[in-house]
Length: 98
Image (tube, rainbow, N blue to C red; front, side, top):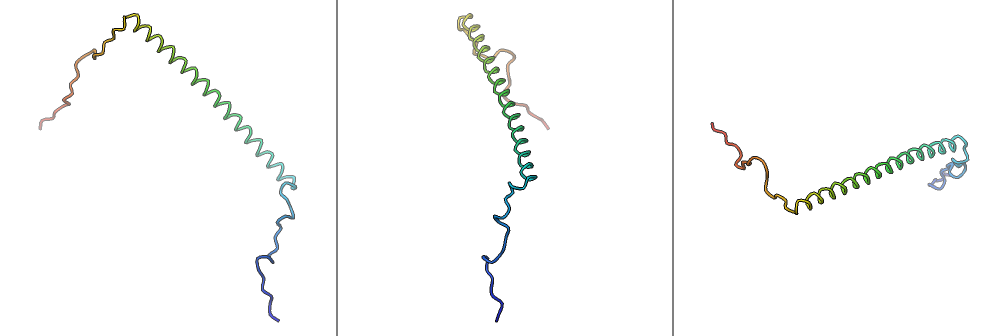
């Protein structure tokens, strides 16, 4: 008789015999990993809240400055100078002579 042929179904594995969650030290390592991730995400969310508060404060400052400028323009009678103040600007560029 010859050697019987084996297929994939004949390969023996440990699948299903030992679950990783039943091994105590691996379960504790996973718990530790989850707790560290939770701590990092908590810090990230606090930082994001702080950043949002800073952005909201800056938006309020911008609106207040806008209102002050509009009031100043209104007190002048709405006459704003549209022209450029200061020295004339040359648009011709510069020329180099060789």
